[in-house]
Image 1 (spheres, helix red, strand yellow):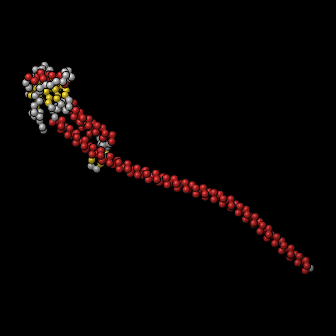
Image 2 (image 1 turned 180 degrees about the vertical axis):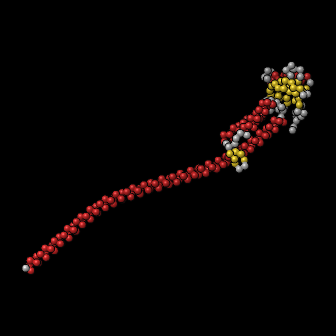
Image 3 (image 1 turned 135 degrees about the horizontal axis):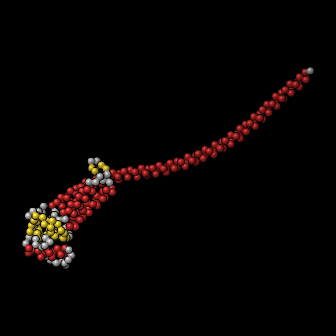
Length: 254
């Protein structure tokens, strides 16, 4: 009887031990599976980390390049703003200068010999019209004109000055109305640069000279008629250049 109990007790311990061993084996197998799964995930995470690290380095390089470009662009914008302000200042000064030149030109024409009055008045009006056209902006308290408008205004003013300058080096004959003692008479007018003006009626009966001091036309002796006729023919290129004797009078200095 005691012997049989001993066998039963030994069998129970063996089963219990075997169960423990199986549990341990299953646990080891599960642990191995979990380790294998983790190893796979770890490899994926490491690969993803390295990819992200590479992308980060690439983004940092791009950021550095963009930063350099941005720095260059900001400097260019700063320089451009400075140039715009300087250009606006120069254009403002140019507007003031052109207005001054226009005023001086008007005063000069007013005090000059009265030749080609309609042509010169129209040109001066055109100059004043162009100068007074709408300006581009305000710089401080000074008007500034746009670049294109500034170039056009400068061109028109300089062209007018060039034409007025050329009058001093040329001679011409044209027709206009002159006044003798308050009476208007159509006459051929000879302009000798800015030195003197002479006139002759189409019938040749009256010849005159413009007195800049008195600012009026006066009749002159008929003895100058021949020389005035010759001078007009030379001005029209109808006669070769030759010497003529004309009463140019004294020079009037304002």
